[in-house]
Length: 110
Image (cartoon, rainbow, N blue to C red):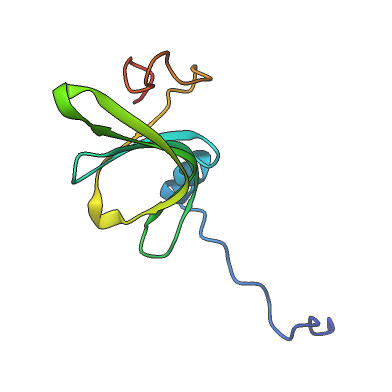
């Protein structure tokens, strides 16, 4: 007979579903997230919370300015509510940096 563990219980089982594994593969990867008001966030995926709000680090926010010009600003770390998200795009695996210019053009996102 084995002695009981120090905490008195066994560790909880891990839920390594294919969906969770895919989500984990995007950690520390660049994401482009579009929200309902037209803003676009470019940042490094840092995780989600239980309601699936998205946490981005080193984030830049872009919005359409006057004359269809993109205006961007650095916003740092942001938590984007899932209910506002219209599109999430991940950087293609073969690319290792943002495209030239605003970072919003090109086929680098899937």
